[in-house]
Image (cartoon, rainbow, N blue to C red; front, top):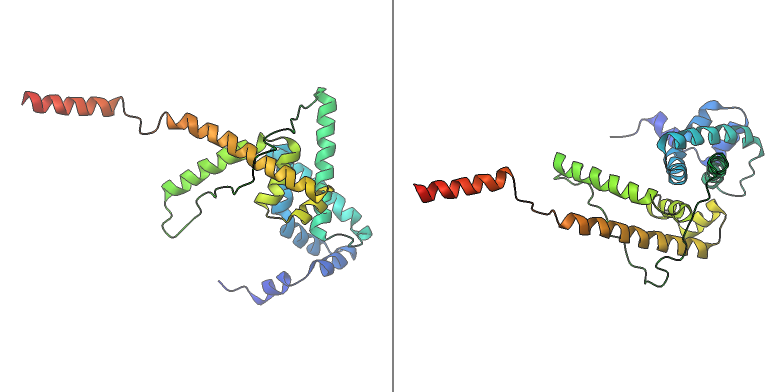
Length: 232
């Protein structure tokens, strides 16, 4: 479907022009800023907070802070990177508040599978021309499993994985967003993938025991048919 001229014109506005308009008090321009960055920023917040409602709330507060701080934005980093840092800071503040409230000391093991060679992660099946409700259900179940396993990753690994693998940011972009060295991004991404492979493999090992399960009514039906033919 072709974009309408007005929509195409809006899409063509670059970030620098959007920032200029927002700094001049243009709320509509800030709406476009939010719509352009919503998915990435929500994923970052969700990866840190592990709760969708809390992530939405953190995103909302980050946007309010961004709007108030926009007059001081000097484009030393890209707009998306600057917004990502605001979201990370908001989420980290919330996490520290939770730790103080519950007096919890997280235990994070960073020495996991460090000596393994990095290899590619198998891709989940994507939508195709032969898509069916059954395939959509399978993808939904796989997505749910992967989200649970990502949630179980240590915090540092989890956020890097979401930015690198889910949002497909480069090593350098991820490092800039999180304020950490590029080498640290590579290490954490590798270890996150290793942990995910291991946890998903364990799920598969358990599931293998139930593959092609045959019992109950199926078993009774076959037995009854055989007996009926033998007795007939």
